[in-house]
Image (tube, rainbow, N blue to C red):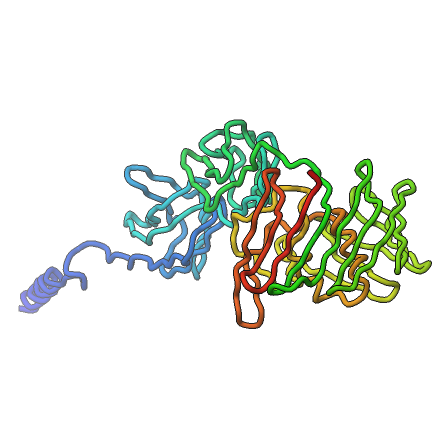
Length: 402
C-alpha cells in the first residue's frame, strides 16, 4: 500500500511539472527590450564623431546608415551605459541611421551629413587666383567645382585651397564639393571680377553737399602725374596749398604746413609742426589710426573688412569694391563729422588715394538714429564711383583727370 501511494505522488508531481509554462507563454528565452537611441538635432559634419544618447545598448551593437539600397557601416562604435559614439563617413546627403543588436534592427532616425561652416571669399576673384574656402568636413580627396569646372584643390585643416579655373564667368559662380561619391553645393556664390581691371587715375576733386548747399570741397592740380597744388573750401572759407615732392615725401605749404611720407601707395609718416606721427593700418591694409595734428588721434573700426565707424551698413553682398584705386566712400562721408581739426590734411590723403585699401564693399544704407536711407551710386566706364548720395540729404561727387 505504501508503495502505491509513493508511486501516485511521483506521478502527480510529474504531471504538475508538465503543466507549467514559461511566463512568456512559450518555451523561448525572453527577449531583451530594444534600445532607445536619440539623434542630436542639426546638420552633422562629415567625418566627425557623432555622440548618441541611448538606453539599452549592449557591447557589439552595430550602427549603419541607409539611403535607398546603399548601406554604410559605421565601424568602431564605442558603447557606454549612457549611449554611444560613432564616426561619420565623408559622404554627403540625407541618411537614415540604424542600430542592430542581438539580431534586432532598430531605426534611430534621419540625419543630414554635410561640409559645415563654409565661408566663400567675399571679394571678387579672377581665373588663376588661389583662394581659400573655409569649412569643416572636407575629405582628403575632396574635389571642388566652380561653375561646374573641376578646380585644383589642396585640403588643409581650416578648409581647402583652390585655384580658380579658366571658364568661370563674371559675376556669381556656383561652388560645390564632391567626395565619397556624393556632392554638395554650397550656399552663396563665388564672385568673379570683370577681366577689365581699373587703371589708376588721378582724382582731381571731391565735392560734398548737404541738401542743396555746398559744404566741403577739395581739388588738386597735377603736373606730370604728381600733385602740385591743392585748393580747399569749407563752407565758403577757402585756402590754397602748394605741394612739393622730394623722394617719397610730399611737403604741403599753406595756412597749415605738414608733410606726408608715402610708401606702398599710402601715408606711413605724417609730420606736423616738427612732430612725427604714424598712420597705422590693419592686416588688410586699411587705415585704422591717423592724426590731423600733433594731439588728435582718430581710430577707425572694421567688421568683415568694412569700416563701421560712421553709421553706414553694408547689407548688399553684390556691392563689392573691385577697383583697387577706389576711395572708401563711407570714410569720405563720415569723417566730416568725426574729424574736428584740419579737414584738409585727412582729405588731401583721401584725394590722392594715400589712405590704404578701401572697405571690401560700398556702404548700402545710411543710418541716422532710427532713419534708414539707401545710398545711390554712379560709376564711370573705368569702374570708378563718381557719385554717392542719399536723396535730399547729402551727395559726394568725385572727378578725375580725363
